[in-house]
Image (cartoon, rainbow, N blue to C red; front, side):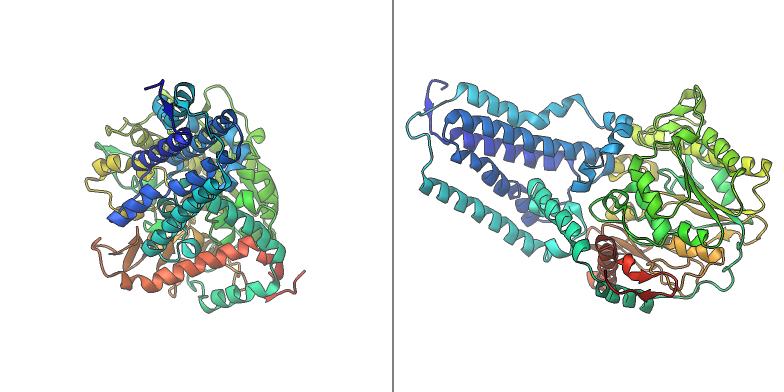
Length: 628
């Protein structure tokens, strides 16, 4: 067979088919792509082909077999690299790479342990088409006659390539109308466009975003401003100003979800101190509070906290728009005489914080260089939370009061590793090492929070401070649903997955007597207006999408970055409308008004960021400014 002369297009055809079939296999085995009907399966199968036909087909313009083969090898290696990069990224983030993420190179050095945990020796399979192609180039003999394609042949070939593309787009539009104009779900884009076309689309979107700022005008803010003003509500009369003049300490609880709180794992209490806080007379606990982060994870939660704007769909605002004009919570507090700081025992450039904090008007960033890391005090991502809190409180004693200091924890971070002496409970016994270790690092974080309260009391800062704590994003991704089902004792449906996005939100005001469990459904976008209201600071002229969680007027409605949402009546996930509480599927029309509102808010927030529209807004009196 190897001595036989094969037709001149054999290597090209083999390269296309090998990469096509490999890509489809990876879709089915390495990504959790939901397929609801045969048409979606057909689209998923067809979607890689159009780009591969075009990209590999460019080899037809080369004049020698050697150069054609060399091009096909490089093209195959490139497509395999793109696909594999998404596989590794998906294992950690349960999402697909976007262009801004590729430029977040300052983060890569800090991702060592997390990345290593996401790479396996069997990953050589993701380059199987490259290997097949190399063997074909070496052993298959191509007819030497007429090896160069004619202009007519190339024309026919690329007409076929375009036909496949239009067929793909037509089927996708039939299955998902307005896919390219109204989708915030990258899985939906990959499922309908294919991985490779998705990246071209992402390139277009990111380029358009850069152009938007250049051509943005003050008038672009009119519609957004009108929407926010028409939906504005008054803060709580009872709670407003209750913490006026006090120090504000906000703690980001890394990867902390709500499901371990007031629960056990194999008979072991997971969060004893946080459990006590839920019953504390000075602590308000929100069990129905959701994270709303996207690819920016912790940085997105910071952005939500400071601005009450939604994070971007395609990347972290901390990277893509760190030079924008913002009206941050730190800036509001600073205008009232507060000194403002962030304390985080990591490198200052991680998530581009050193640049972004200037735009957020944060006075001081106490990064890794501000902390002492002694032997045995570091694990995984850096300084352990207990010594971090000890040193952070010591730093606070030197701060001018009143102060606002935000603390970002590290230990409860994927892949959730701990030194033996810090393991206070046993590991879980599921098939997921990630979930098994998670309970142990959550238990350590709980102990660290207890030490924070003790340190504040010992240093005389406790009584005159408000302590706010929130989970920054999920810790256990949907890749571990089977293990989560074992722990929870029920199947993790799209409904349950949405519910698992709950993260803790605590507001502790010493001596207030206002403690209790508040069942209000809320999200991270509500933190800024809630906290500033407690501090007695007016936000009525601010452009923010959140509401005071204590307000009697607020609508219980939380929008996720990917378009899912939760209300007091419904949960919308995976394009299905569920009844909140019963988890029963109901008519999608019941969710329709909320779907429209969710898309509207996400688009308005995106336009503010992409166009840097707050530069056209007078923060003092709430009026639009003339354009540049």
